[in-house]
Structure formats: structure tokens, C-alpha cells
Length: 177
Image (cartoon, rainbow, N blue to C red; front, side, top):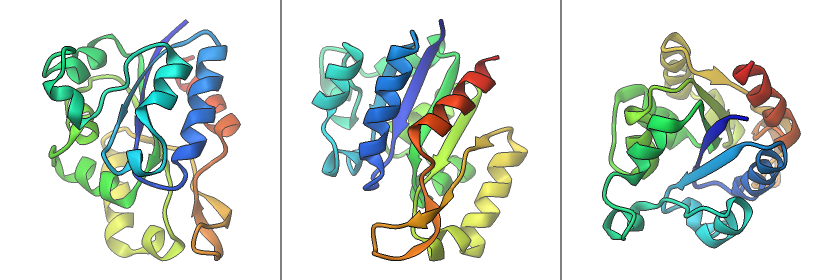
């Protein structure tokens, strides 16, 4: 099976990343997780440690025993880099080469194909700057899964909801061939 690196951004949709990671592990993939500090507001690294039986990489692990480049070592072995949820912030960082935390740094250090599952408010998703950044990433070969239309955290309905884990899993399997 494949080695999948999962980046988790700071969104309420981070809870879905737990389900996605579980499904990837159950499908036989080796999964490494790297998460932003903001993702930790919604789910803890311990949840991903339990699901993957591997250490979750965060900004704090840069100074731990895993070494300062553990996130880059994970990219060397990754067959695919999945970012779910991928926030407007991460999309902007990826599009403009900004590497100021562990997920954006991992993105720039990865040579694996990239699949992102956006998650944000409808107005953010439709903002011209976000759409311009999406076009930059698509031109770079990044694959987008979603976003979907549905109920959002702000108690609104609209496009911006992260795709369901089963949908992302299907896209992962397709990308892996």
C-alpha cells in the first residue's frame, strides 16, 4: 500500500480529518500527519497518534526528539500529500510560497502529488483572491476535492463545506492509481 502524508489545517472540519485518517489506515496505507497550531484548537495530535500509531508532527515537534526536519523526512517517503481541511490561509500560503509553520513548510518541501480538500465559509471560498490562489495551485498540478455545498459552521448553507472523508478517500485511491 501507499504512504500518505496528511496535513490538517485549522478548521472545525478538522474532526473529519480524524475519520479520513482512520479510513486511510484501515485501507492499509501508512499515514503520517502534520498539523497546524490552529488545527490543534479543534483536534489534538494525540487523536492522530492513536489512529496512525505514529507521532503527529506539529510546530512544537520541531524542537522534540523527532528532529527539526521530521516533516521533511516524511515528505521523502510520501506517495501523496493530502491537506484536509485546507483553509483559505493554507491555500494562500501554498500559492505564494509562504512557509511560516509546519504544514506550509511541508508543502514546499514535498515532491509528492498534492490533493487538497478546502474548508471555509462560502464568502471566503468565492472571494476573488482565494479563487486566484486556487488557479495558481491548479496550474501547479494540485488536485482539489470539493468544497461541497451544505451546512456550514456559521449556521449558513453554501459552498465551502469540506468533502466527506469517503469522497476524499476515493480521490486518494484514484490519485494513487
